[in-house]
Image (cartoon, rainbow, N blue to C red; front, side, top):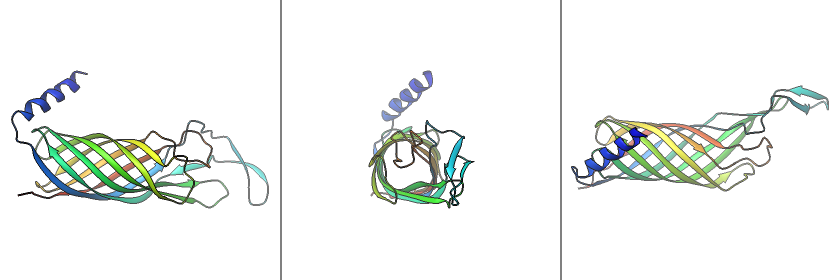
Length: 202
């Protein structure tokens, strides 16, 4: 709790020392996404194979798939230590659904994401990202339980120059996403890695 107060104090103190600036920018990169196992997950699983035999096999599972994200942001630097960064992103997510005795099934779901990122800058190059998002389904190849997801970001970035940097984030959903696979509370999990480019406004 003390650390939270220290960060808040540093951000407030920095606001009195720095001029507010605004930089728009682009971000994009790779998503490594999967869907959580759910609260009803059980390794004991029986199913009918292609020959009609009732057998015990491995529980169906959601494995990671690779896709991409792209978007833009507006970075409002309010102090030396704190930047408020609204973002609008297109994010392709989903999972590979694996079942014993069946071919793997690719589950694709795309979101339009509205994020409010709180960026804490500890040096000129290194920063931490924390913030919520609301994701709207824009495309999918399976039945989703909800068309909206609420998620949270946690990540970090490194700036090579004042314009170019890289970032890595984890995004965790809290709204069930899967409908026809009855394993319970299955939610989105996304690990992303990419690059950012900020534009100077004269």
